[in-house]
Length: 189
Image (cartoon, rainbow, N blue to C red):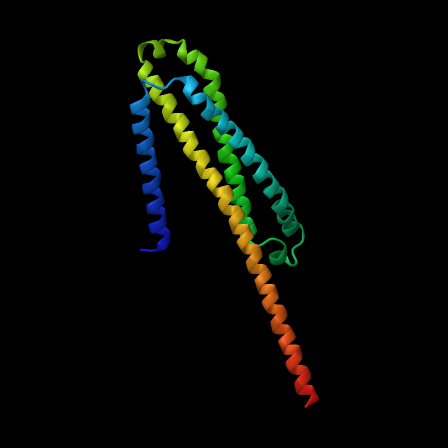
């Protein structure tokens, strides 16, 4: 079995485990948690979305011009916009989209909460409504944590790429100096 399949199965198991944990927490606390208890988490989720928009927006602004240049200028495409840059920009746009989805869900949830809490369903099934509210907030929290992880991982990956490129350049410079020195000494002989 390839490592990609194993990694996908492992990630699926982790996501499924987290979903089950979220369901259990939502069931256990559906009668004791109130909206007041969850409001700080909603505020943190909103601020985190804003943070992700800002950070990834800066990254996209950094990488995007190279993508446009690779389309316009066909020569030296690899040096202008590499496969890593393409992968990175797809990942960044994906993270921004996920974070935007979290923000949209929070806005919709905040907008409909007063109508739900004063409606027929809440009066007849308050525990079910609380369960669903807790479940969705915790699910959005997990999704946002994944987005934060991707932001951190892409920054670390970028730093590692810079270090690798710098080390390759230094090695190339040393090798070329060594060749030049060897050529000069062979010419003297």
